[in-house]
Image (cartoon, rainbow, N blue to C red; front, side):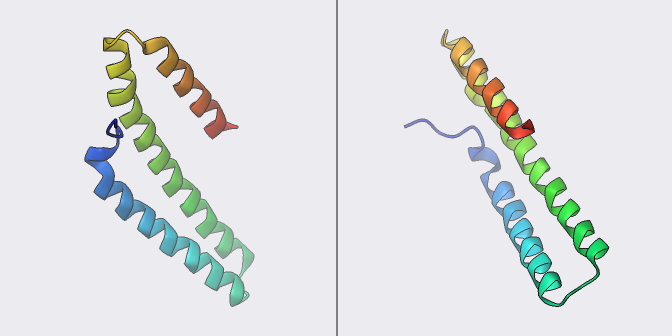
Length: 92
C-alpha cells in the first residue's frame, strides 16, 4: 500500500484540523448565544483561511511526493490529470 504524500506532515495536519474543529465548535456556540453576525462571520472567515492552509499543504505534499514519484515511474500524465481535477474541485 502506498504511503500518503502527507505522511511526514501528518502530525502537523492533525493539529491544524483539531484547531479548526475547535473553531467550528466556537462558531456554533456563538450562534447558540445569538452573537453579533459580523463577529460570527469573522470567525467563519478564519476557519475558511485555516482550511485553505490545510488544503494547500495537502496539495503541496501531493505534488512533491505522489506526482513526482509518478513522473519518475513514467505515469506522470495520470497524476497530473488527477491533480488538475482535484484543484478544480477545490476552486469550484
